[in-house]
Amino acid sequence: SYAFGEPVKDWDSKRREWLKLHPSFAAGAAVDNRVLLVTGSQPTVCKNPVGDHLQLRLFKNKVDYCRIHGLDIFYNNVLLDPKGTGFWAKYPLLRAAMLAHPESEWIWWVDSDAVLTDMEFKLPLEKYKDHNLVVHGWWNMLYEQKSWTSLNAGVLLIRNCQWSLNLLDKWASMGPQGPDPKNWGKIQKSLIKDKAYPGSDDQSALIYLLIKEKSKWADKIYLESEYNLHGYWLGIVDGLDGISKGYLEIDREVDLLRRRHAEKVSLFYGQMREKYMRERGIWRENKRRPFVTHFTGCEPCSGEHNGMYTWEACWNGMQKALNFADNQVLRRFGFVHPDLLNSSWSLSVEDLSTPARGVPGTALLVSKLEES
Ligand code: UDP
Ligand code: MN
Image 1: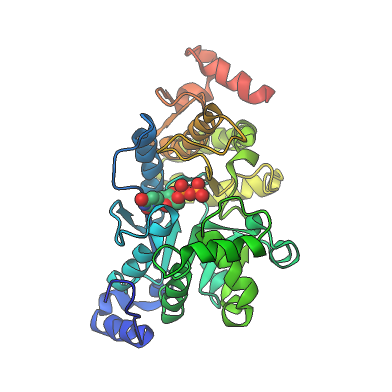
Image 2 (image 1 turned 180 degrees about the vertical axis):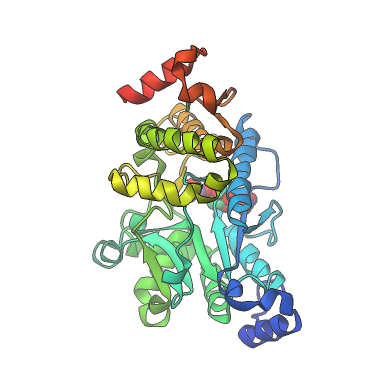
């Protein structure tokens, strides 16, 4: 059954059987690395007049990433369970996605308000071969401080297997789909002191399971902190111009080589960049592109936020992150947004590489990037 309430049993052997019957999907190592990105947004029109525009651009960003890396993507904007609204909407969806896509080893949930800001970065799946759930987080912060921000549930990789289905059932049972969400809200609040939201939330529910049912779940959960599987936007967006600058020089060299050697070079585009980055120390975290920039708290659809920052800060941050990511896509087409705060226009890469041509905006961009 695709619906909550009736647990799925024996999924691992059913899935194996399905793969046997569909040999084209079962071929070799590919099956272990097959990823389906799942994301979505609310079923109705956004209250905030710019919300749906942002949702479209946020979706485009994920589609671009999936196209570049050969991942499948599914966008959902219906409530599969009427009780599972807001951040709880993903649980019935993840469960249904696993059953509908037995060919996918991993389901990668990415909140709609998360931007993939490194279009070349590949998920290091090999690292997770003994784990079934990967989220961004820190073990010491989780167990020593029991902090709400010790992990983030907005971006997660979950293996398509029985263990995960069990976890999803358990996880969602603490939310509005379960019998007593109010009580779960209280239990979470008493455990997690810095929890702000009064009701039961999914991030707290996962923290609860890791603390209270550690022996049952923890050994299959990987808390990632070596790169930004989730990165909090406030700490990221101001640095994006500077990061662009670091890559600009490399981009220029790669573009030059690409013009000289045409398609041969584009094949090695990624590897070349890695080599240059290592040589120049751009590998360090503060100069490297963050993989994910998550606008958690910004609420693009409602435009409401938690009072720690203005809506303008959210909007500008989203422009920057979306254009920063889009520049990596446009570049392959030979174009670039010169100003991360301005989405509407782009320049050709040639104009950018030869500022002497005096194309309006180019010199400005180059000087802006070079002074930052
Ligand atoms: N979402 C959904 N359907 C809905 C409402 C939300 O699929 O009806 C998804 C959407 O992708 C959103 C995510 O749930 O990004 C989590 O909510 P949100 O990002 O607002 O939470 P925050 O990150 O701000 O805590
Ligand atoms: Mn979010």
